[in-house]
Image (cartoon, rainbow over the protein chains, first blue to last red):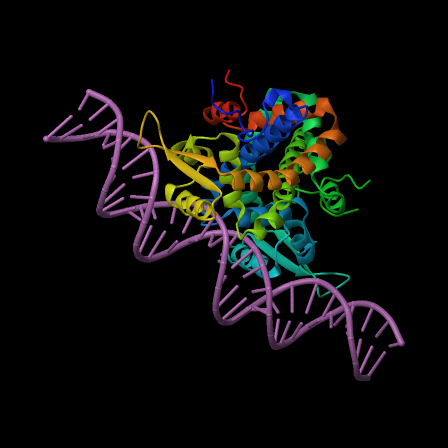
Length: 173
Length: 173
DNA sequence: GGAGATGGGACAGCCATATTGACGTATCTT
DNA sequence: AAGATACGTCAATATGGCTGTCCCATCTCC
């Protein structure tokens, strides 16, 4: 067919370029990352809507569940948003009784965030959807693919953030 | 330490549960997917800001570049947004001379979307950042990891959407 | 003990991106 | 000719970000 090949509308013939495969591989990764991320994310929207919350609330909930007693500034760094934005989210969560705070022990200016029992129950319920999606993708792909999946994604995280991510996962090295 | 283990604040001792590893693996995937996606995405913000555009514009630009002459309804399906939302984005893009439309050949109600020469140049420039990020992650992980990365992500895309994704990538089977 | 730095909170206003609902027009199908 | 389809548009609303500014409590350091 005379239809232009993808992403080469004004370029050379696709198979002539030595970079063609590389570009195809990159685009494939970009697209799968986009669709994989958005579809997994969508899987929790229904559960969130039941509580009148959004994805921003889930992200906070998730990381507080993941690392109880983390401080507001740690959470800010993880989420990469401003404290005003996070403030709104945390207010919503605590007014619903899902999150509670205590003053820091060594530094009383800090607030240590953790989930209430209701918060744990809610996060667990939302996590079910994530678990289902990830588990079936893992199962279909096999263990070797899983480690490859992790390795590539780690490489996508900039050096300066990688420690933060691995620390969440108990890989302090 | 007596600090509660992540995600088991009210649960059993982490190493006692037979599901612990699985939960850890799932959370690791969820987190890496989140950080990998957001960090890659951020890498194009600067380029977009130069044109006064946002990520929504880039997504449209990307998929039009990827599959020239796709129709509005095809793009709507790919992006999973409403036509009102897409309408605004497409208006921005065509008023900047980045996207042009032609009437469909077999069905003149359709509009076939493609990039102008300026649009191609701009998308190519943005793609550079994506290529850099993905390429270095690919290079660091190795070919076997790359295929694993793809396999897991494919598994995250629901059955009903998988054909659409693979078609973009020229894998019509 | 006092000065300044830091952790956290809050008010105000704005922007980007999405939504629902209703309606209009051109074109295709039957 | 009638209805369905592809696309566009107006209007109102929600979400989740942002900047700027100011505040209080507490810690650190001289």
